[in-house]
Amino acid sequence: MEQFLLNVNGKNLEVNVDPNTPILWVLRDHLNLVGTKYGCGIAQCGACTIHLNGAAVRSCQLPISSIGKNKVTTIEGLSENGEHPVQKAWLEHDVPQCGYCQSGQIMSASALLETNTNPSDEEIDSAMNGNICRCGTYTRIKAAIKTASKS
Ligand code: FES
Ligand code: FES
Image (cartoon, rainbow, N blue to C red; front, side, top):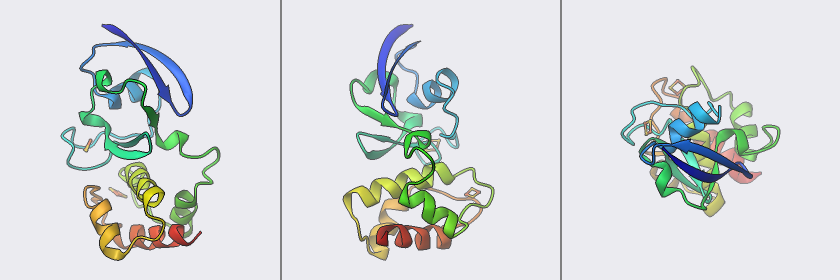
């Protein structure tokens, strides 16, 4: 066990865990931030996507020892009240089906729009390619990203 200081959703927090623990499990099991989901555990599905200094990363493959002072944002910290343009667009398009993949989808989409405010279809496909949805909500995801990009 080792002590780590983290900045998560704007708060400074302290946890005692094995240095190899993926940040996904620190978030879920130690900080009770369970919006970030476990899907594959091998960086292949995107369910566990969070932001590290604003960039989308797969938390299942990111040991806590690699986080340092970088700012971690989870779906719980994306906005105060679900008011992020991507969250509003998701509601408008009624995107989720079972919902399991959706926090990861939203985190990838919001990271994309931070760096590209008006992405083309190809750019959306490329950015969202690693986020799998077993329910096949891809068409609505793309429409919601386009709506969010216009807001
Ligand atoms: S659980 Fe991390 S990418 Fe699938
Ligand atoms: S909404 Fe069910 S896996 Fe995406």
